Length: 365
Ligand SMILES: Nc1ncnc2c1ncn2[C@@H]1O[C@H](COP(=O)(O)OP(=O)(O)O)[C@@H](O)[C@H]1O
Ligand SMILES: [Mg+2]
Image: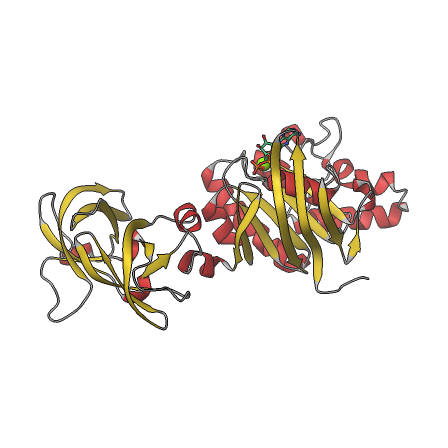
């Protein structure tokens, strides 16, 4: 029965290649008109999941629905989806116009409509006027835009993109990320974007599905993934985190007090109800730690340490600070207002590290 809320539903899907379980009992529902990213390390099953949606691979188990209908056995060209790959494989001997119009020509679209839709698609990717160029006369970024236009011209319900910017240099990639997000908002088509680059996923997505070992570990908005990672893997993969083991001492609602070696009475937060004595991991982001020379009077959550190393990177400075008996903590300061010289710390200096309760998250796995 067609369901209007979700464009794609992946229901308990497993994909086995011989001994390898590329996708492991994965369930994921993709809302219409949103920008989704599948984010995870190489080999975690992102491409395989995308290829099953596109129809290039069949699930070993489970069901995939597009627009509410089971697509089992439906070949790729009969699915209302299009894919853009990293290696876009334009036809080198064809003009930009013919490359983009190719799909419509195959479908015997009347000439007038073909012309109109091709020019519209080229306008969407800001290539109006380049109809007669050949791919080799264009930059990598422009060629990738042609590949996008070639997919968009079919007016798919869902556009699948597999690391499409992977071959571009960093500056161009950042520019194209913003363009892609704008384009998605304008056309309103559901985008599913595969990447192993966390910054890219944070920049573009309405929702990020963080994957590892064939499973989705967390599906949420970028801010929620960053601020409230559900596991150590997610906290580590998206952004940087300091981790330490601790035992729960007390809890009141989301407010938890834990003890760690050399760090007594650390105030942290957790959405889970934890029993006293539970072994946990606490994660604190480097940029959420404040270093001061003298402790604030009467404030909890201040820990004495020593600067062991510092790395200046232009916009930020990363300090490595040993706190209590714990391993080194990384503390990242933005180099704004350095003119006041408040953060002029040197290796060997004694410091106090402080963070607010909300910035220490208790993780259980
Ligand atoms: N056609 C295939 N045959 C055998 N193993 C495959 C095939 N495609 C993918 N795999 C394996 O499945 C796992 C997931 O691969 P993939 O989906 O390409 O990961 P990702 O895109 O996240 O890097 C990997 O271990 C990979 O080696
Ligand atoms: Mg891949």
